[in-house]
Length: 295
Ligand SMILES: Cc1cc2nc3c(=O)[nH]c(=O)nc-3n(C[C@H](O)[C@H](O)[C@H](O)COP(=O)(O)OP(=O)(O)OC[C@H]3O[C@@H](n4cnc5c(N)ncnc54)[C@H](O)[C@@H]3O)c2cc1C
Image (cartoon, rainbow, N blue to C red; front, side):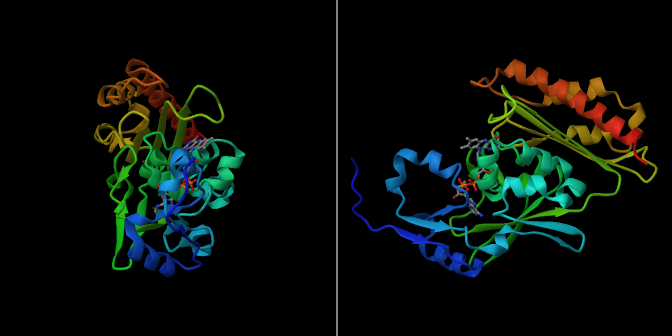
């Protein structure tokens, strides 16, 4: 049995500034903990290696969803359950709310946070593709600087991000979408609940005033690459086009051609490519019918 020989620091500050001070003093020597649903599992056998904890649970400011001018600010400690239940998220960013509702089980959704999902940077993290699709920016604070980074530039690889040891992710900032923006979220896994995704798709399509021409689009996938990805070629094929004249089969094929997933226990490369094509077609069909019923 392992016996601890060094003292263990545990901090649970009430203010962001105090947390930043602790981070600037201890940096790599301290581990930030939010809900602990990823961290405690990853470190189960090695918890004795951690000699310092910075627990964010008392920082109220990080638990709020706020509307500010033309954007929504989501605190990093907002749980999946909060996202799932928020009327504002349902109204403006439905695919983010649906993705949160698909995470784990009620227990996990009550503890797990958006910040933890982002910083854990699993290629299968359910919120990541929706955040890129919604053009999210992440606010990173340290004792000496503040950085706002686009979600697509934050992830470097599985469990790797640009976050420095002295930085805290404090807010996720989402610009309000145009009025006629439609979204679709699809998660494929072996079961309906408590399952790590085999593949996910978050598709957001912004239409013009007349609800005819595609103004902007983001097709983002999870679990098909080391990081969540956007298929940028879809923008080239869709923007400026009449939605009714889009060739869904061609767009589905483009998604299949542009991804290069690996085989793993959850699915083969071929399976993922085939499913990616089909879920892209399904998502376009769903958006097509939501568009037709827009009043
Ligand atoms: C049974 C089970 C089922 C699950 N199902 C799913 C699922 O369906 N989909 C899914 O995506 N995930 C799933 N997860 C994974 C996990 O629940 C989520 O990723 C969750 O969002 C992690 O959040 P947390 O607050 O628990 O993070 P923590 O475990 O506390 O932290 C995760 C990492 O982020 C860092 N961190 C946390 N907050 C900050 C911050 N503000 N600033 C800087 N660093 C920070 C921590 O240091 C740590 O490295 C599941 C986990 C379990 C145990």
